[in-house]
Length: 130
Image (cartoon, rainbow, N blue to C red):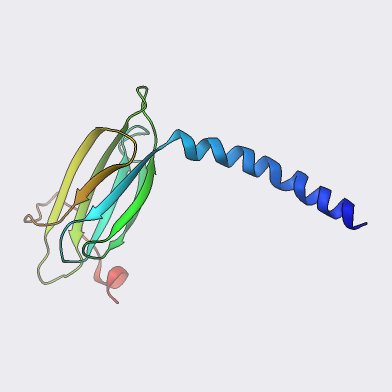
């Protein structure tokens, strides 16, 4: 009886392992680093999938790195865009950039050190304050 349960478990887990392994290896590993001291809210878009394909949207503490997996384009490279806004509602700053043609294990520094324009995103204090 114990052997049947083990076989059933193995058979149910094997398809999951087979499906998840290629998906992870097909992307480009990119490290997103907040290169400033202030906490920011960062949104990263996978431009290979489209301009609205959000792959990361979270608060990032100063000098913190977050790994993400970005889809490959036809040439095996990653293309992303990012926006950032400071969490401090009294000194709101913003930032954004596009990074194209990134290779394996690329690093992207993000920051919010410019005045926010009308088209820049803003964090809500209720969502991100501790």
